[in-house]
Image (cartoon, rainbow, N blue to C red):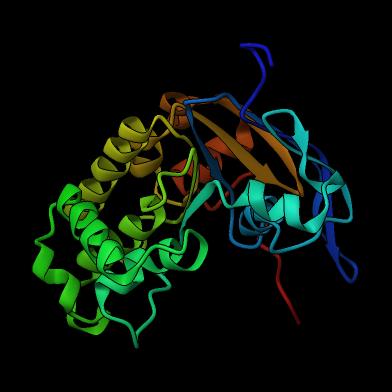
Length: 258
């Protein structure tokens, strides 16, 4: 291993659904210990990219490397072991409605690490505390929580197993600007505390600049721009500028269906 080896490296990743080429040769690198934000319009393939890395979708072609190891060349067992190092915050939380908060947070610990319930409950309380939630919240059910609290619980579940890679799918969707900033701050704290490498997909430009070290734009199945997240609003790239400023006119055309 060398110091310059990216934590995540994607090369020539392709995925089609019928005649729709969603990913058409995606190249992306994320250095260890950094946060990458991927932006792009609805249907541009952002979620498909993450699902390919997680092993939820099998790509048609390309390489997906973690620490230089190509996941697609591994046996199913070894691949699951690699992807188990990834924590995921889903767009809408994806909490289990039938389970109390503490079981949601500790679900992976009990399922994968065979942690006993009493230990898992205590661990869930510790993690909730790190995110500013009282341990008593663990006894509630997701439906009893506000949107912001549900996001915190989902984040707690994502970091419960102390992953060295974290994925965030639209982490501020459905939140007001203040709560969005709070969640972004918690994400930054978690990433720094764990020393993790992070990848987030978002439409929220304020969030992208808060949590990203670097950013990349996915359009037409490929990465069309990459650079510092701080430069998103002044990239000089016509595609990025139209998207980040929400302009109706520009090189990006909306696809219309008859």
